Image 1 (cartoon, rainbow, N blue to C red):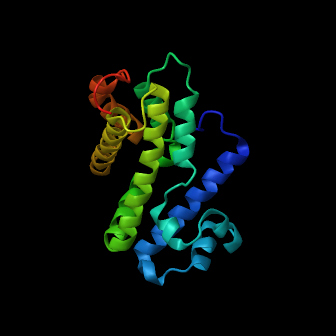
Image 2: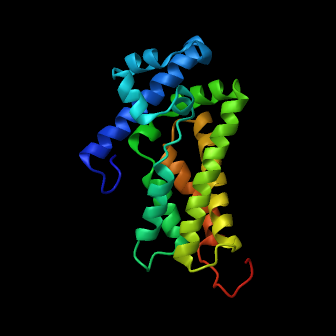
Length: 207
């Protein structure tokens, strides 16, 4: 499944990035992270070392797998929906649009990455920091869409709850691959969405 509005060039870039992530995680799981080189990762993904560095500044970044364009892309998508779409629904659709076939089919890779990261607490901390930066971008977009001040609680709560729902869906997915990740994330977002589906007015509490 391609992302809406995605060009052929963008799709190829996404696929190359995914291939490099897979190579990094698999080699790290097989040999131990400290024993894997960028040259070996590039060879495993069948690309040049130069191509590797077009996508990642280091093998640390490749292992963490955080796409620096994901946060801005999702925030832009949240703001681009028609006015009739609620902030929650815009957020929900933006999250689900990120779950491509590559991610739906990447359960084994996700488990391997988790295994490697648990052995490297320093990289685990960096992974959480990357998530926090993306959450802030999305909260800003939700707040802007809802016409709420930056300090209002609603956008932060919506995005934090959405992130928690995503993590719960991934945890369930890790235990049972009979359901696609996208379906689990959609279900999880739907479960908490009733209470956050409508943004409060800027005059209500939470600021």
